[in-house]
Length: 337
Ligand code: SF4
Image (tube, rainbow, N blue to C red; front, side, top):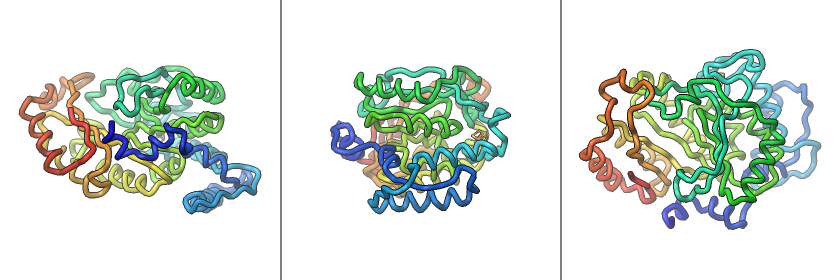
């Protein structure tokens, strides 16, 4: 646990009651805007208010909060959805996107005891739908199907507050993928009163605009870093320009308000050199101190049998080789296995 504490000091300060999660500060910054204002004007106000927050200046004058403003922008974005890098530009009030999300649907929520030790117990909310099509997805029944129910944001906020009272260390937003649900999540957080840290458990394929909405909302990016090679990303996840988008987003996230990382990398059979490239990038750009979970849990499911090269578990030699790579790169706070 001391490694986690070294990599995630702010998160532990929140757990100890010494600091508040970021979204509480979004509620303290006041702003004025008109609901029918043009989105470009709203972004300008947003950027100015966020800059104030980052400089530690809490503006107390205004009718609304910065969280209200983020929510309004997010709702406007739904009319021509560009929340993720696919940028379908569909009106999500009328149509289902490529991610199979129209209205938010929640498949389940519970105290997850199987996450990284520093997160457990983690109050995890599973959203239906995903913008990726990973052929080996372990959650394909919720990511590649529309399931679940809409829960009123006020009610969901009460459920989160109750989970906090019962000992949840964080609220863990996952799916599927949380990105298509950003407007819903902002609305829920607007009603949450407990000081519960927000964990963004995502494939990191957000658009730059969505990244701006997440700035100040997220406490920990539990970001997945899957592919080092765009051809493989396209073949096995149907994701385009993966490397450019995901590395860009990690670098953008690095500049976000008081944010920390817990990066997950699932080692794929036969692709150990890709693991080396990903871990080297993390070490160079996010630091050797960053918390990384290098996972050996891959097993072929969903449609993996259609791809013989990944239709197996990792070999003993591959696991040993990855352990050696982690040592060689010198990641100080990695979890491996
Ligand atoms: S979240 Fe992404 S995939 Fe879904 S509708 Fe919006 S742009 Fe399309």
